[in-house]
Each structure stands twice: as C-alpha cells, then as structure tokens.
Length: 310
Image 1 (tube, rainbow, N blue to C red):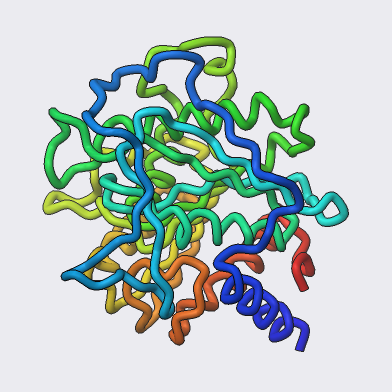
Image 2 (cartoon, one colour):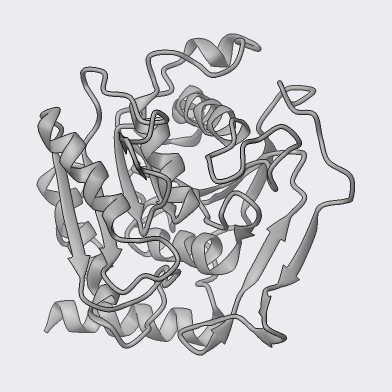
C-alpha cells in the first residue's frame, strides 16, 4: 500500500506540473573556469525548442517534450531536496538526445523532481551538443565525456560546501546520456582533457551509475572502445525495453555482460514493452516501474534508505 501511494504521488506531481517545484530555486553554475577545453565551437546561439517529428509534437506519456541544443557553455543546474528530506546523496543527470540535443524536461527537470522526492540532490549536466565538426558519425563525440568527468570532480570538490556526501555521488543518464554515464563510470583512471585547475585533482569516478535505454555500447566487434575495464568500476543499474526502436536493448545487454565478466556489481532490467525515451513519466508500460526497482537497488547498495519517498 505504501509503495502504491508513493507511485500515485509521483504520478500526480509530474503529471500536474511536468516537474515538482524544487525546495529552493535551482542554482546554475558554469562547468569550466574559462574557455571550454578542446571545443571548436558551433555557429548559432543556444536554444530551447519543442521537438517535432513528421510535423507533429514528439510526445512521451501524452505530453510534449522540451529540448535544448547548441550548447557551447556547459553548466550544472542544481536542484536540492527539502532540508528535512535531504539524504546527502547526489546524482548528476545526463539527458539524452543522440549527442545532438538534450531532452531537458523529460530526461532532466522531471528526473530532478523525482530525485528530490527521494531526498536526493539532482544536478542536470548541460553538456556540449550537437556534434562538432570532426566528430565521427555514428560514434560518441569526445566533448561530452570531458564535460562529465569535470562535472563529477566539480560536484565532489563542492560536496562539503553543499552538504553532500562525497562518497555517494552517482549519475543517471538516458539514451546517449546513458552511454555517457557508462563511459564516465569506466574512464576515471585518465582524464580526457588536460587538467584546468585544482578541481581536476579531485576524483572523477562516480560512486554508482544508472543507465537507461542507452546506445553506443554494442559494436560489430563487440563492446565499444569508449568503455574501459579498469579495476573498481562502480555499481551499475541498467534499464531497457525490448521494443525500443531507437536504441536496441542489445546495447544494454552488451554492457551488462561486459560488466559481469569484469566482476562489476551490475543489475540489468529488460522490460517487454516501453519503447524509448520514457524517463520517469507514466507511459502505461511495466518499464515505468524502473524507479521503484532503482530505489530498492540503491537501498541494497547502502546508498539510500529503502523507505525514502514512501
């Protein structure tokens, strides 16, 4: 009964407003101290738009979606939970969009709202997009990993000031953002950019990762070279739907199998239906229960009390 009530509360909050109002106005900070390293830039200003497909609004759960593109100045948008619910746990949120755009509401703001309900600080990473000249078509670009590594180090460096536990800093990503979480979680031994300041002396290894309907993991030769297998890869929670026509579930399966063979604490959930891009919205498929499974998993990992949000 408690779980049903929690699910109903989440449905009402997200359905009514698209995202729960944060405990306080979100703080936005620049990711880099100056010029974004190794970025050739793109023409055009950053913009927000409603995604259209074949002349019709692209909808998830019966609602349209808001997207961001032309990002040349990466930022962190920090949503804090109410003080009486704050667990000290934080998660960087990596929206998807094929490394072309960022699903800002469905895979960003609404995810932060859900995390806040659990007492978790949600931090949306606005990483550089779209792809830059020189990026290889069909392969992950190099810029977002640099932004993600910097983001982990930045948040961890500010953990004491922000009242966060530096040992409970995770990531959650969707589609291309899911790949970005996987790449960040396995590429912490070496930075993809030259250190900029003292922040880059702080570890860029996330303490856990949640990956939803990711792409770019499976290649004709096996696992993508964007994934490495160092010791001490953090625990990973992986979600996909079998009927996903945009990113085949085999990407998540390939990632899971690679992690299993490497001895990583990885958990995989593949749902029969759900398609792609569902985020935390109610879409009428069993995949929408991934949030409950994820909270249970976080509890078993000792990262979160299992009764939070109930």
